[in-house]
Image (tube, rainbow, N blue to C red; front, side):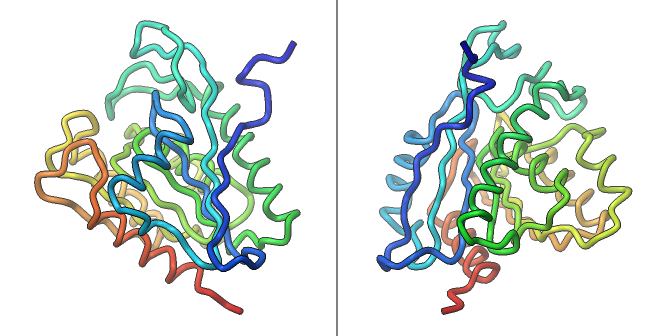
Length: 235
């Protein structure tokens, strides 16, 4: 019997609001310990229905339960294992790559459904944002954009190492972080943005005064405007 990690990703799909076939897709990855339903409910609570689109459908994949080292090996809904929550840690690449490949398969499903790669935006919150950076930049296709909220990558991340050898234009990115985040330190997030810029990524970084490890109305409104700019209604 296949384990939860080897099975296809479960997902919650929120259709576009105009009743017609969608022309673009957002894939939104939740944070560690959360669920697809949980992050969608969280967004709706924060922004009261603002995060919806007439022409874009949103897919919220659900991370499988697997042992998570920062919780002493307890099972948790996480995209990958990590040795510690620290910018100086090293990545558990076997764990990361299993989920990276599953997200790529999810993207390919959208392409088979008629959505071009450049009309797909991938992103997430916290660990979901880190997973999006791996899946979006370690891919042989160029997506419409990558977003990462309250996230970080280790200083020697494989993402950066592989991007040094890029022979094509990388997808644009938007990173956002609260300056009072006590889990993912603000300086870790801005360091990722600076490295991406040095690697020729068109990268925006937005900081939010007093915001902890959370999302805010202002943040989601900025994200929505950025997404509409990258995925305009082209009917």
